[in-house]
Image (cartoon, rainbow, N blue to C red; front, top):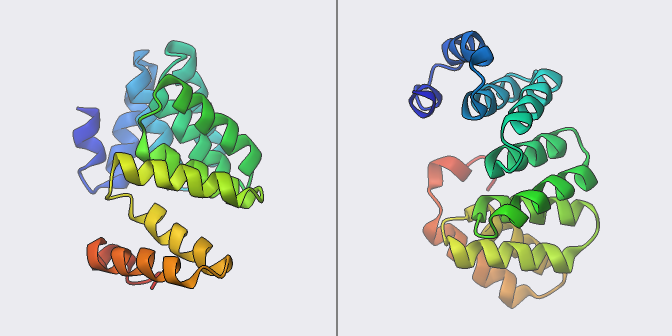
Length: 168
């Protein structure tokens, strides 16, 4: 039920339903509630939902990763790194979490480790287009223009245009 609600494209209705299910004692429901709250800008409530989910399932890698994403939104890259690293300790094969970890690491000034995280993410899932784009930008900043061009050409050839038109 929860995954189908999240995919419904009806954020307000999804949030209302998830709020009624919040007392179910189910970590997945609380995680979905946290995501929905974060999407509507209710970050403090989202954090509370994620932390309640962790009380029910301390090793839930999705919740740990979502807390990292929330920390990034709150402009706390150090906190984000901690949450992402905890998620990756539980499961080192999370390409989206590795991509987000790279973002936190760049914000912390550790470009080398960011590039390593993005490279690992791409090795696990070549559809991590944000990692590809970020590697292009990072390579350009390092004046490795040939490498930047390769990443950017790969990004432009593979990434779905509709989801990145505004960024390009």
